[in-house]
Image 1 (cartoon, helix red, strand yellow):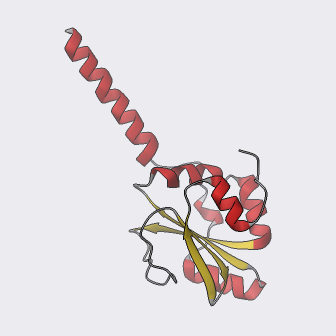
Image 2 (cartoon, helix red, strand yellow; image 1 turned 120 degrees about the vertical axis):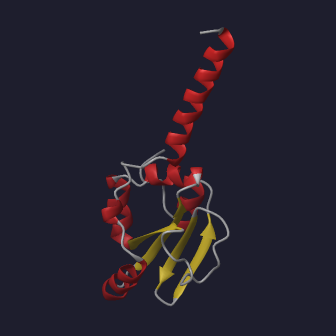
Length: 138
């Protein structure tokens, strides 16, 4: 193989690995700990907890960072105070949210009937929104 062909092949492999990391399946993300929108609202009303909605998109690199952040330890902490809901665009409809979602990730928090949404770009910003310390330190 000539030198140009080798560089091209290496470039294609690197591109494929990066694409897989960004857009691939997030096996560490435990979807079973997250509720659907409808189920989350019902559970939030029954428990008196606030709902915590993570609005994601498969093509969102920042969303993949958040998916990796929501480990079992973080989910235990989150579930103490909130009912976690996960919505993934375009698979899930976003029409029911109180704010039109224009970018990802978007997080919504509140009691049923008083839910507010914000676009969040970092773990620190999310922790500030929730008014908590890091769970765990990142």
